[in-house]
Image (cartoon, rainbow, N blue to C red; front, side):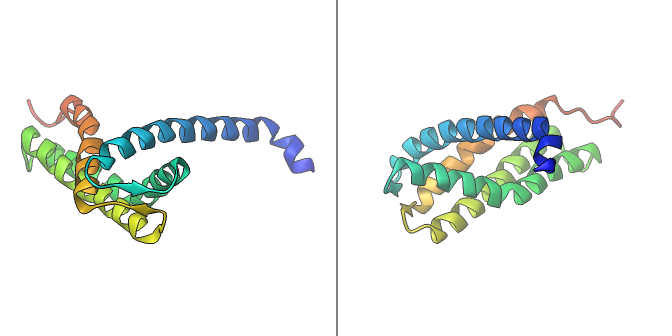
Amino acid sequence: MNFFKKNKEKLITFIVCGTIFVAALSVVALLSGAIMRLFGFRYQSIGSIILFFVIATIVSYPINLIAGGLPKAFYKLERISKNNAIFLYLVLDTIATCIGLMIVDYSMSTISASDLSILVISFILALPGIEDLKKYKCIWRT
């Protein structure tokens, strides 16, 4: 009981932030589910779509960190050009998201996603990350 009194503000902040995160992810999940449905995505309920994307986000997060950092590192070390870094990011992030979605699709019986629907939505979800790479500057260049 004393723990809850001591950490009341932290717990409230955590719950509020978690709720906002899940709400935003739910909107993305519903929009993504609608796009994927065009390519053969099947589900039993709206809740399964949201659960599918929440779990897929958690599963693919570690791989997405590498996929996002590797192109930046190569560009910063002047191993590749900015355009190649953007292309590499798109490929790696799409593959990372595909892996996460395929793992969750395999594990959930209430969801059936075709490979094409997973590939299309993975590519679409990778596109916003390009803006981060476009703003990224190589500090060694003069």
